[in-house]
Image 1 (cartoon, helix red, strand yellow):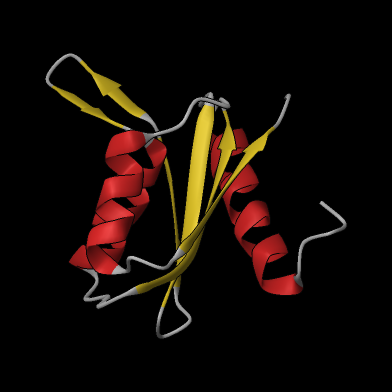
Image 2: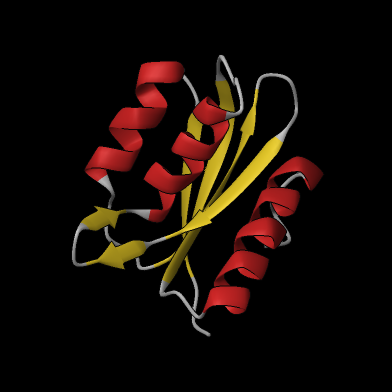
Length: 103
């Protein structure tokens, strides 16, 4: 995590806190174009399945975010196509960083 700039470290810290708080396998955090940050974890209910990144995007959009600067996904290394697509709808050039992390 040392090679990350302070803003990316903040996103990692938010994702880590959400992951620890919930015990989720994966967490994500994103920063909108106003500098506000949102964190989310994977939702796996019988009636609703969302990736951590999808949750973070939904939180941002429901809070009025018009764009995304950057996002971090912490945990499972697998690419999240649906979450990445949601970010790209708001900001095609936003940076999405996937960080494998053990508990």
